[in-house]
Length: 431
Figure (spheres, rainbow, N blue to C red):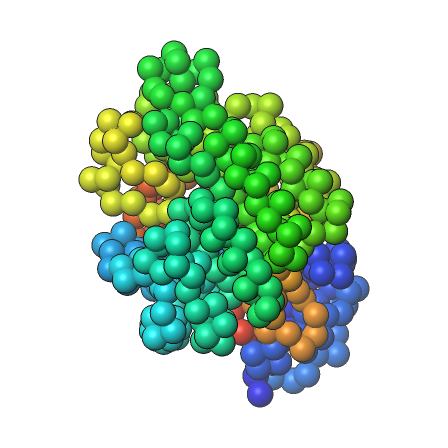
């Protein structure tokens, strides 16, 4: 059995609240020991030694919201290219959305995705299946069979389940299997005419707006349905103050609800739509500064559980259009960590809180073996240089699509090495 020792590391493990200098021993594919305060002394002969140079060694990131193009739109992204981007960003597990062609709404397709991931991906790939067949919002998929096939959750991706009776039945039925229902909260009757956040700035730009209520109305409805059914509910993206308030009330009642926010909603606001930048055409849209600050506060207090990349690759021809006609979405696997770290560098959110939201907490919600440095668990690791500054250049991204909302922005913090099940899948070039 191969043995690798990561020495001279700042070990940070949100699952145990460990933050101490020391070393970590990998035995084969799993973590053998975590030893705070230890250096190179006493290591077994023949062990590979990796000097971490005092940098942070943390669990590999778990990204709960990743869209790819495979199957059906491989020109946007494949599982292979998404995994390369993920590895470069320190992400060792990606949860892929089922909005592909064909849709992931059948056991055979979940099996296909798992086999393709084993053959082509260098990180762990966990599929979600659709809530409704053909995304029709009416007919429930075979949640039990799909769970047995390996689906870690159920979502219609960027489409909401709008019918209240259907959502009630879904939550009730899924609760029989302990299955996680992931909702994209959007009242499309309110949001359909809009292309950015509703407000004075949208008026100045001459663009139609999307009010926060287009999200929060559905969140408030869903909280009542969760109370009615005792279901497990996760809000895939949160971007509205009243959504936060509804989640807070539900959690205070002991309901099994969790929520996520994208990294870009934490560090950008509606002003980043300036000059009609179509890379900033997102769903939900970037909100006002006060809402961004409220989201940061929600993350700090633990009301928001998870930070995601909300990785949504789009082909150039779908973005090089007038703002109102451009496709929604941004790539984000490689910028998830440095964007989130901006909150640490600006002393807005503790580092442990940020890392918990992108490692331990998503793993807990999904019920997967990840997001921890505990001995005996898979050796999924990220070695991080917190202080490294770099400019986001689309051409340098490993994603097959380059539509990054952070284009031209300077971020701080990069991944030096990514390890999946004890195997190094990414190593940064030395300066």
